[in-house]
Length: 345
Image (cartoon, rainbow, N blue to C red; front, side, top):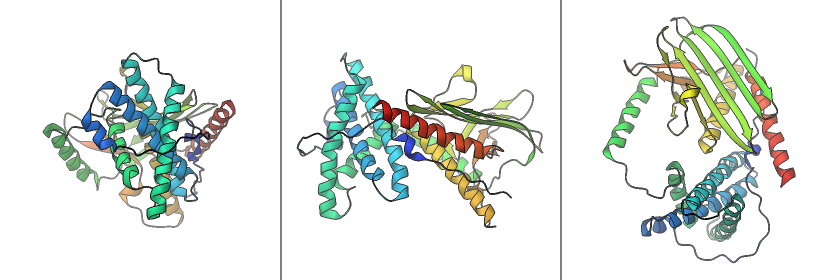
């Protein structure tokens, strides 16, 4: 089998912030875990998200300057998280009636980034690792806030949510040994390579009579990347299933639109996390094929569909005939948008 090689460049995600030199002294920070318990007002939501934006930005900046490849990849995701928190801050400021611009959000995040940077320098001098103490504690809180859509109301999960997790865990076990449907033939394929957009799509038929359609999209709007996953599995002429899981991950944080049918899209950090994992799994798969190594189910990138009437789960593989071309488009579009962003700023 021909080895597929691609160059996935994470650097395009470092889009939203630049670190100018500025001078403020590092003050002792109150842990965010205390602040979110003291008060849950709109102003506290604003302040905490500004802190989280600066925190993620400072850690991302440190990781991006690292010689460690994994750290550089993490930097991209952290810059996106910083951007998320700045957007949350703007939202809460608007709810308060404040004239709070994007530039103000960036300025505030830079202020806290500088403070956290000095905290990391202190922690490094004392422990040999910059990620510890209040930096690590606040990062844990910020991750929860980001997953909560910017809200600092971090109550304990209720029984309904726990039951949902238990049910999902049981379904995940059922999928552990369920290989993708056996493909019969590729019906059609499509690749769109545009200045600010990459799209790959493919329709396949299977030996059991099902037909699937799968699509991945990257698009830049005003320097900000957005991601989309589209999927359909026709199990009969009357019934078409929509995606339930992507790489065994729920799509519950992704946005949907009835007009777009079975499309899930986001411009938040989960988008790049999903796509990063997808690229890595495909790379590892073809690497194993080339080296004649044994393959496991976990080596295969899959999309899962669920028949809500019967409870049946179906997996399809996420291999595309034109994957190399899509990967090249992904890298080029990312790099060109990053270059344009730097030139304007």
